[in-house]
Length: 279
Image 1 (cartoon, one colour):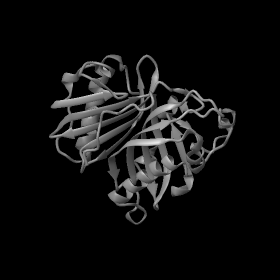
Image 2 (cartoon, helix red, strand yellow; image 1 turned 180 degrees about the vertical axis):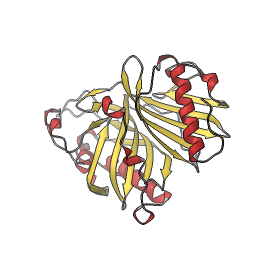
Image 3 (cartoon, helix red, strand yellow; image 1 turned 60 degrees about the vertical axis):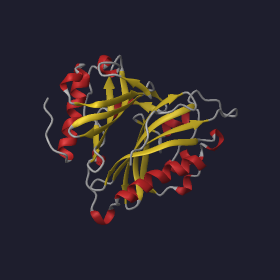
Image 4 (tube, helix red, strand yellow; image 1 turned 30 degrees about the vertical axis):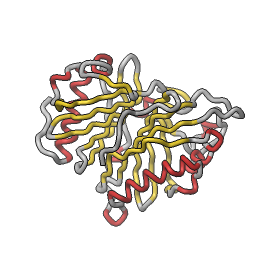
């Protein structure tokens, strides 16, 4: 697969698709990699030909591919078939027509109360839908919307976030808001986005290493990555505590969050991503 030339959206998406194709084929030489190419998977450095280059079989369906032409960043969110189907979030930085950085979150949490990887095979077209300028946000506004979500999580105060009344949040493909099935979960609660945030208070979340690789004004999309440490709650023992390495994909309309898709992998508390925000 030969990527399109140029620096616009079409070229960035084309190069991302070329990278995905080469990844599945296990052929790093089939995609242009910059001389200083650096890649990680779940915060661990990997060299070309290692990690997903060896284990990927296919990327089924239609992942979401978002890009930021000003930054030269592309984000892919969907599912990847390795030994099994796994949630995938991939960030690529493109410089001078070559892949300079590749950051992958490949979750081992594929099914359960807080994961449903099958729903990631064909991502919702809402992220591709354009937003009329009068209902959209500037790059600064998009970044602020994502940052305010992290601030609210760090303070366990859902009232700090402007959320549309139709909004839902998905974690590793699973709808975690307004879902009666979650009544059987460890929380035994039907949540909204705001109540999920407020409900984290006993775990005292600590949000670290916030980054904002994509702000797409035309589509009202912003992508943010963070490391979030959750403490153990002795009153509500859970297996999913530690450091959540999270990539959040937000749709923002009328100054409110309309939808969130989060891909996360749980790492040891205090883990570092190994990346910094270049902006």
